[in-house]
Image (spheres, helix red, strand yellow):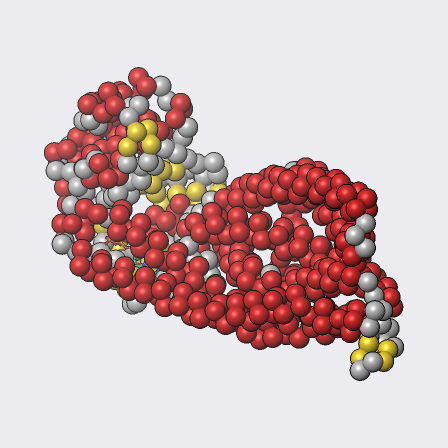
Length: 586
Ligand SMILES: Nc1ncnc2c1ncn2[C@@H]1O[C@H](COP(=O)(O)OP(=O)(O)OP(=O)(O)O)[C@@H](O)[C@H]1O
């Protein structure tokens, strides 16, 4: 019971916000229309039920006039029923797409707000495969919630209407056993109730493992898809390393989880279907068995018996709602669990972002200052400490240190996406920062948009883009600005790094952080790019991470991460006299 309450509370938490959002009037209006149509459909089924009585009596009495009248009456009812069904589906789908659009935008907003998506990945929150949650689960949630909600409404209203009819029919055709009337008021209603209650309990008993199995199935499918995408994205590496057999084994093993779990679903579904199919077949003859004694004792006409069978069928259908909807319910519950986990993961990421261990505070003066900073890994192991380390405006600083010391993590903390640790990073309010990694990201699409990312495609003129391309040594690309492509795949890493510098030149941030951003270039090209940065971005503070000693010449200041205890400490290194070819004054 508490499980049902919990599930309904979760469903409400996920579903309700749409109906009080900006689109609420449209959403409520469409929902109301769908509900009203459903009620009208139930009303029609009551009329159809009465029609049974009159129609079959006319047949029994061979009354041609009543027969033809009833055929015409049936056609009118059927025409109205068809129109209602058509519009019910149409309006239902209209509501589905509006609701889903709203939910998708909300989830995209939460997931891609600040660095929530990164935080969720960092801590491995219970939100594997967000793509599946946003794309597939929202669609399933909206569709299944409406199907189940409307189905339940239909079941309740049908039950109420037909219980009354069945009660009346029980009086018309009293239970007749062994030549005697057995006066049980509403015995047809009780018969239907007992029959459905037994069926529901057995269905739940057989089908309950399906909830968990469906949940797992979705996860295995998503894992398999994710690994296929990774293999596609890393095709070159896999081909160069001749990693195909390893990939094939890995993918086959992922798929074996999909197949094994599916086999379990199949065997469970087989048992469930065997039961539900027998149950629904039995329910066709069950009412005749109940009424037959009264019919053969001439206590009731053929029409009465047919009406009873039809009413019994309706009561039976509505009471068996849970049985027929069991698979949908199981799937719906898994979808609920996944969306709930996703919403919680977004909330968790937002809470961590709002209460980070590492505070970013506005710097009173210019520059960036690391105060009593202790960065840790997500699990709490110490990584870097730095206290009173200040990077002055316009300064060019090179940070060196052993691999894995935490240099990139320091950049992440300065960018505000690494919350683990303590202390603070003072940085001017509204400062513009740009991080250039070793492997810059270019969205798939037009080259122009890939270069100016994350700005809009038209934020810079073609002349500006062409100019920086020429300066970074890629003049040929200026001819291809309109071309669509997967630039991370087609351009060499060196070209990608040049494009990264081009992006920095266009955006001209106040603070530019280069994390081995020129490491794939030869030393003369790297030197040329650093000189270009110095010339074109005179007001920009530059902090670089690099392993090459030749980089020192382009920075006024060297900082080093050296091991102290379990972690590393950031401190200045006395700079050896370097030839004046560097940025400062070259
Ligand atoms: N999300 C994470 N979860 C756990 N450990 C992490 C995570 N991200 C980074 N690390 C670990 O933190 C340490 C520092 O990583 P970081 O990338 O900052 O090193 P780095 O000094 O930039 O190394 P390199 O010079 O090789 O690029 C590494 O040991 C890395 O394995």
